[in-house]
Image 1 (cartoon, rainbow, N blue to C red):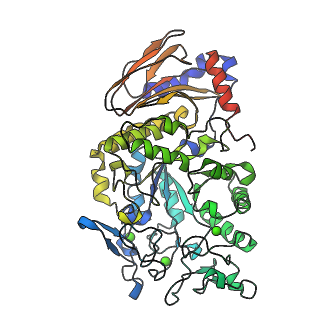
Image 2 (image 1 turned 120 degrees about the vertical axis):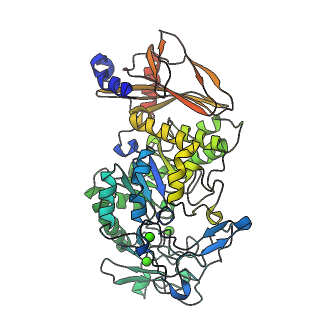
Image 3 (image 1 turned 135 degrees about the vertical axis):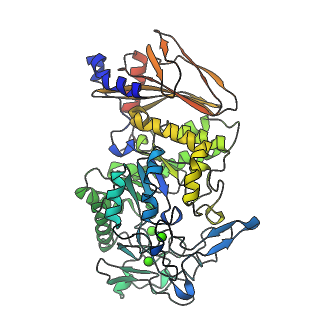
Length: 555
Ligand SMILES: [Ca+2]
Ligand SMILES: [Ca+2]
Ligand SMILES: [Ca+2]
C-alpha cells in the first residue's frame, strides 16, 4: 500500500498536461470520502453506569424491559445503558475497521417514562410502542437538551465530538423534525409525552393526549405546533407550514452543529414538505457552508426519493433505499444475479442530483438485518466499499450480529464490549476491514466516476476513475460472489500500462489493445490500479458522458 500511495503522489510528474485539464469526478463533496458506522447509542456499549437512571419512571420504569421470544431469545424495549463514553471508548475499534464517521441515534431529551398507549409490543411486532421507552432517541421533547442517559462527566456532546475527532472520527447526528414523542392514546395522560419544551425549558406545545382531529390550533396556542391530522402511529405530527416550527428546529440543530456535529442524517424526511427542508438546509448551511445532510425516505422507488436531492429542494442527499432492496435480494441468496443491483445505480440521467453522494447500506434499525451467510456479508461489503456511494454499516454487521432479525426480534439488541473484543476473529470483520481500509486510501473508490463493464451473474467488473488536479487514479474492480475462484479477463476501455493489484499479488503489464487477466478467489475482490491520466480515447468518451449526465436532467 505504501508503494501505491507513493506512486499516487508522484503521478503528477508523468501525467500529460492535456489530459490533466479534463476532470473526471463522481463528487467532490468532502463528506463522500468517509465510510459511516451506524450506532444505536443505547445498544452499543455501556461505558458509564452512573448515567443509567435505572430507577427512572416509577410504575412505568424505563430501564431493561425484556420482550421474550422463542428459544430463550429476547428483544428489549427499555434503556440498556449505552452512552457517549461507550462509543468513545471504542473509537479506535471503529476507526481501525476503516470507518471515519459514526452516525449516532438522536441525542435529544426523550420522556422519562415508558409509553402506555398504542399497541402492545410482542415478539416480532411492528409499529407497536406500548411499554417502550425512548432509548432510541426518536421521541424528542426538548430538542435543545441532551437526554440524561448519554453524557458523562466532562463528556457532553461538544466534548464528545471533539474527542471523537481527535481519534479520526466525524460525528453524524441523527435528527428528527417531523415528530416528537407519542402524543395520544394513553389511558391516562403521562408527563412529557406529546409536549415540546424550548431552550429555556418552557412548555411551548402540548398534544394533551388528544387525537389529532381533536386538536384546536385556532383557539389553543399549545396545539399550534401540530397538524390536526395524524402521520405515524401515535407520534405528534409537527406542522411544517408553521414558521415557529421551522425556527425551533433550525435553532436546535444549529446548536448541535455548533457543538461539532459534522453531518446530519434526517429522519422521516418524506413526512415533511420539500419547502420545509429547503429552508432548513439553507439556514443550517448559512452558518456551516456545505454542511452534508442525508435523509431517510423509507421508500424503494427512486422516482419518489430522488426529489429530495435536487438543489431546488435543498440539495439533501438520501439513504439509497432502492439500491438497498436489490443488495438484500442479491446477497441473501446464492446464485442470484448481480445485474439486479446494477439496475439501481442510476449513473446516467437518473433521478438523483448526484448518485455518488447517496448513502448506501444493506440494513438498519428499522428493517430486518441482512439475512446472509458470512460469505454473503463479505460479498455485500466488498460491493458496498467499491461501488458508488458512501457506505454506512449498522453496528454488529461486522460479525453478522442478529442477522435476519427485525426490530422486535433482536435487531437492536445490546452489542457490548465482549463482542467487540472478539470481533477481530470474525471473517466478516477481517474482510470488511481489508476493503474499508482500501477505500479510505483510494480517491477513485470514494469519489471517482463508476463505469460498469459487466455486472451480471456472480461477477461484477467496473472502473472507478478520479482525475483532478494532481490526482489521477484509474481503478478496475473485479468482484466474485461465486463459490469458486473465477478467471476474469477484461479488455473494454482498458488503458495500456502497469496495473498494480491493491490487495496484493503481482502487477500486470497491459499493452495497447490488450486484456487484463486475473484470478479472483471465491467471495473475494481484487482492485487493480493504474495511476495515470486517462489517455485511451473510448475510455475518455465514456467518462465524459458519465460526467455530463451524472445528475437529474430537470435539476
Ligand atoms: Ca450508561
Ligand atoms: Ca429523558
Ligand atoms: Ca408529517
